[in-house]
Amino acid sequence: MILFLIGFMGSGKSTVGSRVARRLGYGFLDMDREIEQQEGMSIGEIFAQRGEAAFRDMERRMLESLHSDGDLIIATGGGTPCFGDNLELMKSKGTVVYFKASPETLAVRLRRNQHRRPKLAGLGPEELLRYIGDTLAEREKYYSQAAITIDCNGVGDEYIASHLEHYIVDYFAQQNNPITN
Ligand code: S3P
Image (cartoon, rainbow, N blue to C red):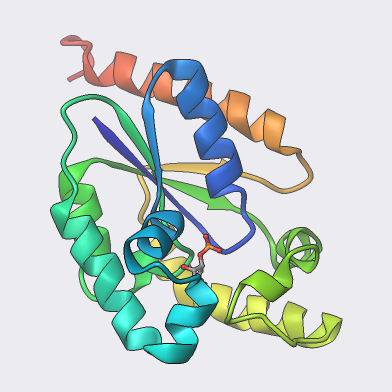
């Protein structure tokens, strides 16, 4: 079983995903980190030296090559479900979970490590909020197609982690219940 975590940068996909995977004994894969390892470069360097289109190809190839015998949680990049038919591919391979947060929540969370993200580097506080608002509005049509949505506003990572854990347990209990199917 593969679980894809989608959502904007800073929504907590990697932190929460790795924590829940550890607790449930699932495997965990962070697509950005995996791409960095494969390429031997940071995401910032990939964007600067190869360009965004090349990065999106790398994401696509990684999604295509994914298969799992056991249970696996995958933290995707914020843009992953919004390019090509990546979202359809994810839906065909597993269950998609959206970490939903408002631009204000995301701006607070992102300010701390904004410099590590090529799309955000150098933006002032107001520009950051505007960029998040505009981009989120464009991406919401993809994100909202997830099978499960978790509201991440006003709560900490631990709260989100325990919610995700419960959702997983309930969701798959229902899927396996012949009476509700
Ligand atoms: C991106 C999000 C980043 C990373 C890249 C582009 C985006 O992932 O893939 O910087 O377009 O939203 P995180 O959501 O893990 O920061």
